[in-house]
Image (cartoon, rainbow, N blue to C red; front, top):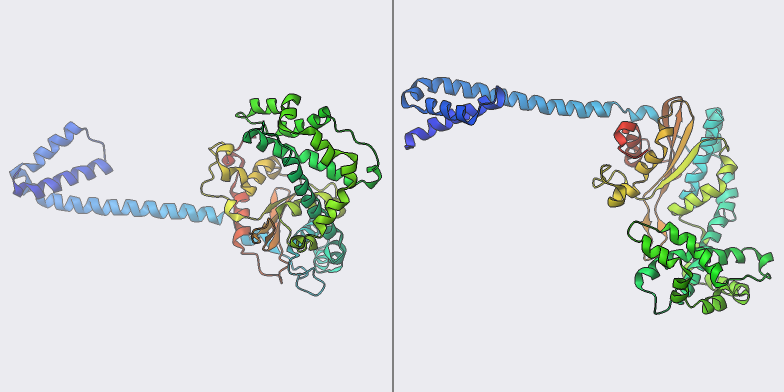
Length: 441
């Protein structure tokens, strides 16, 4: 093709492509025939003005259509956002500051989160006057009772931490009793199952009246204690190995059971537990932990399970979940179409799990329902397991098909009505209809 035909050819082909895009599909044969006609020397001269006009019109039409499509996308996005007017469904209550002289201290936010949430649930469930609720939330008396220097909740946490440290020492003793016959996979599974025996030992210690009794830990008894927790660890891949590890012959092969009975499970060893406890209590590295400061996720849940009936009415339908790491909430890698065992983020997302576990109640238009979200920005303290940061509560109240959200902050009542994390939770709940969850019933 000669050079003088390049520009006319380009224009003709461009016009044809635009023609295909906007009006009707052409076959390859039709496209070739039309191109040949247009590129004819005489035709080009006659057709050129029309080509220029047509290209201009087509370009304008293309720009208009694309711009309109973008505007529609923006309108759809804005419409979705307008569907949730969070300002209308969230309210903040003032609470007693943790930094007041009798406010519990700088590291008491986890306790405050639990206490004020429970008080709010009680008030809303009992349909109390809101002015009374405001007075309760600003009252410092419960702080002294529950998590002051000698508060009941604080003492429970301190004891829980001591028990956990004791179990860690017992765990080290149990782990030292593996024989050379045990492979690493078996050791790992047995290591988790041994927690059952550790709980038994600590349970015996916590009942002083029983310490003088004789406890029989023969081979069959040890097998019984290990069998149930091993079964709980069963997966499709390890089920054959689990069955093998539950057998008495394998347990006898993997552990020195005589040494286990002598050094851990004998009457003498059990009676000597106070020595081990004293070792834990006197550890200088644990003194900060034993002040009961900086609650972590599991400790908030523990206090909730142990004490909720003291404040929350027994008939009130209420659950609690903690969110200490917002990187796990609605993570971009999370995909509801992928089986949860294959998607770590889907499996641990606390909000999506809350929706999955409670979607029937969430969609119930009559039943009154509460959910407490302990929101946190927790960070690990050094190389220890303990975390520090700030907890504050978001409480969802569903009643007669409507949901309201209440938020508080014991850190000098910072305004949390526009809190990004709280809004993230609310939007996930409000946007997730049952048909959109794509989760198993």
